View 1 (cartoon, rainbow, N blue to C red):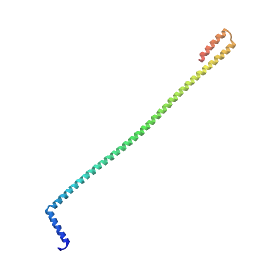
View 2 (cartoon, rainbow, N blue to C red; view 1 turned 90 degrees about the vertical axis):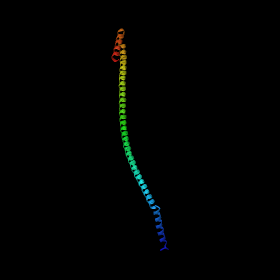
View 3 (tube, rainbow, N blue to C red; view 1 turned 60 degrees about the vertical axis):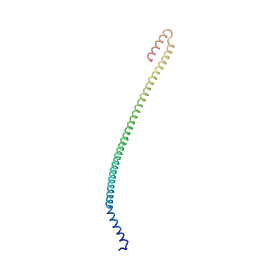
View 4 (spheres, helix red, strand yellow; view 1 turned 180 degrees about the horizontal axis):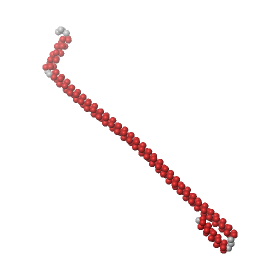
Length: 161
């Protein structure tokens, strides 16, 4: 037994354990383990706090994203409404413009008709005057003819003018 290395290893281990116990090694190991346990506990608490903080941030960003999406949808809807309103307004303005142009064209046409009618009347009166003047010159002579001619010309001018 004394010649076997395992025996001497066991004896050395027992002496080492006894010296460690005498020197307070077990107490130091227990204190070290307690300190390590407390440090691990603090780290776990910090990890839980950080995890909760990360969840809170994630929830806040999810909420903000949803709000941004809602706002974007509202902006798109508003832009569509504005575009429709602008289209309707442009259509209304175009219709009003066409109506004004049509009215102006109709007024010009009516004015041209009135002017043409007046010109035709004036031309007819002029032709009638010339014709009556020629007829009266050929048929009536002298002072009576001149007065008659003058009176008929002024009558014609009054009736056609």
